[in-house]
Image (cartoon, rainbow, N blue to C red):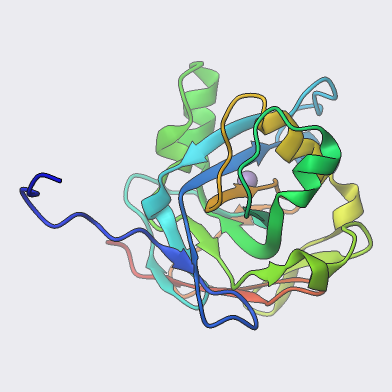
Length: 232
Ligand code: MN
């Protein structure tokens, strides 16, 4: 091992309910348009042929309870509450049952988005990075192990901003189920322990301003909280 020119950055970790050891994060994948009502509010229909993805830098991972500065370059910073899948086993070109077995646990996540930049990039057929790979934009609450969560479907997913309900749906509204996403994504990547997948947001996305307090809940999981700070 050669010497390093400067200290290597530490990878983010996510706490696990009931464990003293934390979950080290490797990569962050995100699914687009996974709830029909949200796709419609964004001016699209869901593509039922296949899911699609974007990614965020692993260094965008931020713990629940953080205060995040309103980011630069946007006037339309949005929340998206999502179910996060935490991968715990290597999985590649997996069928659905193997994909399901690779899910270590679940968490609430916030895919914070510079919506104005996402849309302006989309219109120009450019990549979404400036809109989506925002610093501190992958907020993840503590993970609950899959066996403690039970089957995904009847749980409610609900976000409040300053105490007002903005998103309220059921996980059964997801177009692509957890195991379908892992199975499909594993056709393109060697998924490994530490990979996180944000599975898309229900309808009701909207902007935040400095001072806003977000609280998200999914039945059976730890709540997620985020405070929006003053601009950087
Ligand atoms: Mn999203």
